[in-house]
Length: 255
Image (cartoon, rainbow, N blue to C red; front, side, top):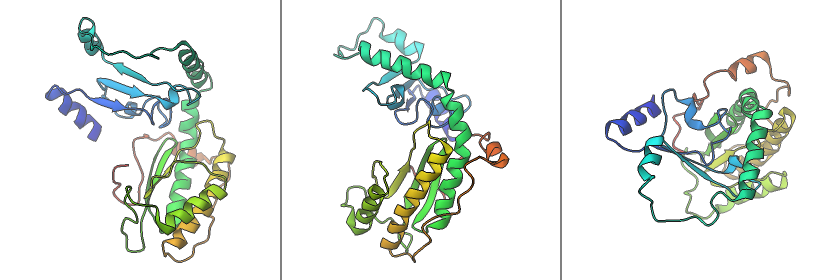
């Protein structure tokens, strides 16, 4: 696979492989770390934050292989960190990770990922302004397009009328998120219930309907077909499938 190829190339040419797990680490993808989806891939350095404390207090971490740590044992880099290993932050991370393990949050993400991906797919099938989606665990992203199939906005440009209307509808429907159009990220809390997830997608559907119309697509029914909040046997079986397989309606660009 791709990631195995990257690992092999780094090993061959003595290049350090660094995995940024700031967004994906601590359960977001259905594994404790995202790189664990790829058999045989062990990075040399891993950076992480966010999920280490569930954002209740600022904290980040860097992990490295023993080879790298041993190299710097007698070769200090000459920099310091005023708040390194702050006892309050460390205590928060300890309790947070203990909760993740005791409540099997990673297992919950695996179980709910089938319903999550089903709703992502329904949104793309309902609204033509959504060109495609990709999802793994409880992390998803939509790509927005114009009726001509073009990118409606470059990220350094002003939002414009359509995305301004969508952002207003998004907020009015009680949703909160980071707006990075033309990509629309969907990242619910890892401990979200199935009922809350369905409610969230229903609210998001109403906001996407506004964007769909504002971009010039024919008006579409604002609510996709919703399944029961209880996962079907089929959906549960799907949740057991390899999580590194991202279903999209077209080749997906990099997020």
